[in-house]
Image (cartoon, rainbow, N blue to C red; front, side, top):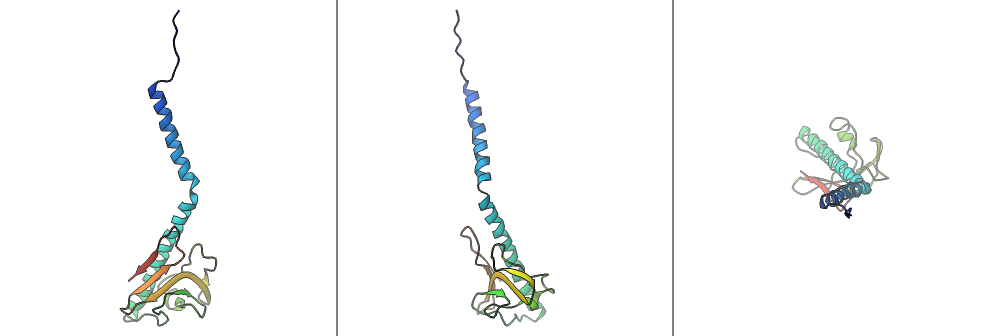
Length: 147
């Protein structure tokens, strides 16, 4: 009588471990959609800040280097309220089609230049360099562009 022992070979065990590792990696990525959404929001913020800055500079180029007088040294939100910097009429629609708004700022909204809030800050330093920033950036990122 021959006794044959049935067992898994080393290759079979390693193959199962590799398959489990691949599936675990896929699950970890799929379980963290919040991070992916935050990254997408930050990408939109980067694009928006660049668009605002480009529009301001195009305005300045067309006006012999003169920036809108509303832009001050204090970083202030771009919007239509008295406490905000209202530059919409300078930029829309000539330099930008509409004012961009922060993707997650509940107060940020744009329909026209009469009443809007962007969620983005703008300022100018003593050297005339303009900075546009997104104070609501997620994942501890700082989104700010200066030109």
